[in-house]
Amino acid sequence: MLPHLQARRTSLIVGLIALVLSIWMLVALPFPLKYSIDAALAAAGGESTAPTGIGSDPGTALLIAAGALAALVALQAGFRALSVSTLNRMGGRVATDLRGQLLDHLHRLSPGRDIDDLGRTTSPLVADVARLRDLVSHTGPRLLTGLLALASLLVMMLVVEPIAAAIVLVTAGLFALVARASLYRQRRRETAAAADETLLAETADELLAATRTIQSYGLEERAAHSLAELGERTGRSRSAARSSRAVGSFLTELITGLGVGAALLLGGWRMNAGTMTPGELTMVVAAVLIAVVLAREVVQHSTGLRAIVAAGDRVGELLEHRAAITEPGRSQEIGRLRGEVVYSALSAEGQNGPLFDSISLVIPAGQHVALVGRDGDEASALISYLLRFDQPDSGRVLLDRYDTRALSLADVRRGLAVVQRESALFSETVRENIRVGRPDATDDEIVDAARRSGADEFITLLPDGYDTHLARRGAALSDGQRRRIAITRALLRNAPVVVLDDADADLAPADRDAVHRALASLTAGRTALISSREPETILGADRALCFESGVLAEDGAPARLAADPDSWLAVWLHTTAESSR
Image 1 (cartoon, rainbow, N blue to C red):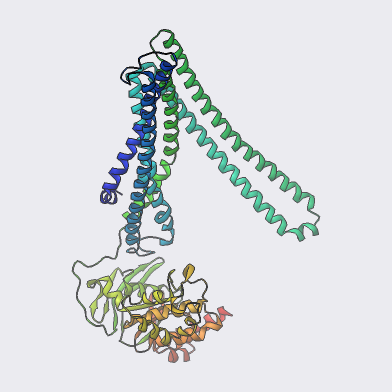
Image 2 (image 1 turned 60 degrees about the vertical axis):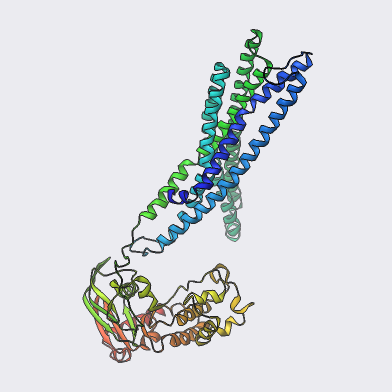
């Protein structure tokens, strides 16, 4: 987080200075309190002189001391408010910067190759970054200033009354130890009580859902007994949690009382000896109480450090992941692509053995090619190689005779339009979701692409048309509608090569024809690489590449291959049809 903190160092310094000043104002509170009480007692006794250095008479001294006390309280509150607002703003901006860095880094990784599952990184991206934000804006500053305040209070008491400093130190230390132990015990019992309450609720739901079975087998008494046992267990665990909280409060209050009592005993002894005034005694008692407050704050903010360290480890681990697919040192400039795709001498190892063994394929511009395999591994690999999500162990992938490894990732992907089974929509308007295909597209171009895909038919019926906000990633739309928006996005991209990755899979009958028409509009006049298990889609392609255990089993026109009952494709189509029944 240091680079992001350095960028906000002015706010960090201002916030920390304000926090330290607020702590020092708190530590200084016993001094005017001492002089106020001494001045008040002097005024009540009719003395003509005030405490040393305060004023010419007790009344004036009382007013000055009271004013100083009020000023310190006001300054303490003001500095604390300034530190809280400044550090919180700084922490929020640092968290935003760190999230942006982490998200940008994660988007450079390839799922399955660089990292097992990008979906599992949501917690580090949100919750863990929030913990680190709290470390720099709340927990860390308060923990450090709490320790600093305790140290300052002890130094002050050592100068004023060394024995009182020992009382403050022992009271704060015992309070911190007991408070930390009781807090740990309380949290453990609260967790157990919450688990028992959840189990009780689940059991009650289960018993109510099984009412007919319970009635049929005469299990009413058994069910009631089971629920009663769980109820008693839940009651005991909740009672234990409350008792733990009460015991912790009692012990900490007892330690506070003992500390105050020790201060009073010290004061009584010193006052009898004439070496301590009532104001000084009040100052010592106030110091003990302030030490207890500071010790409580230190304990509260130190208990979360373990979770924060773990959060930092997880974020750091993600940032240490390095992408296998990187930008070339010097990318080659390209012009307008025609759409020819060449796989040259590909060799790669899969999870279950060789995936490819020196396979070469040429896909001319404008040809529609279906990639077919028993488990789809070969099709997925060829698509990933083309998109530069992955790369073979050896061999090259060429786009219009350009080696894709020599091109920037942006140039490669700019020449491709991708439609997948899971249509990724964002919580924005329909218009902006389509504009993702080409950010500089005009509104008229967006509408034209929607008309060509047929999506305009349902978009215009939405409450706000193209300006309808898609909440929860378009959950209110049907799967076919979401997919047609994704196809419209691909049409708007106007790329020479189209990749259809199960784009027609799992469609409802009502959506099938509309999606197929949209896909036909998208692929017209373009090179298309099609990964599909739908016979209609495969038979409609110009060419089928059939793979068996990484070997190219057949290559030809799908209709001709399917007409031969002994061909690999014909057997696969028959097997697929049988399994779908």
